[in-house]
Length: 122
Image (cartoon, rainbow, N blue to C red; front, side, top):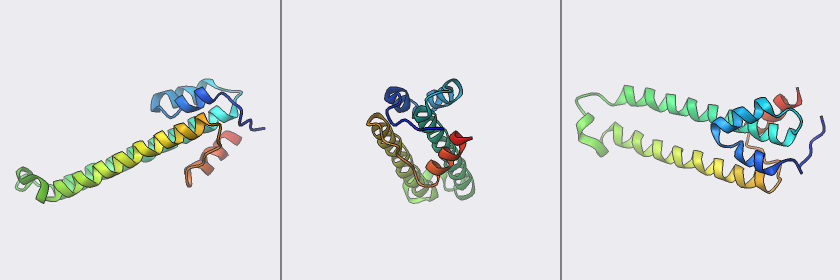
């Protein structure tokens, strides 16, 4: 498969919106640039889901009903801060990736970018 960095940058940019990325990967058969960014978006979304599940498990383990009402100084406060930091970082990566896709760059996220490339090459 040949890669054309001059693919549809609008579709590639919109692919980073989670549901749109899935739809574009399914319906787009010709433009490998769009398919690559859609798959990278899908994999990044999977990372977000895994992190969310892990944070829910940590919350269930460390936040008991006895300390739930005390707020910021308990495990809930710490996990809450970590959750916000991870959420902001997750959104920042999406925005950064959208900007790169719009500029026509073959931007690769660590590990995920290589996985997306292998999937698109199949």
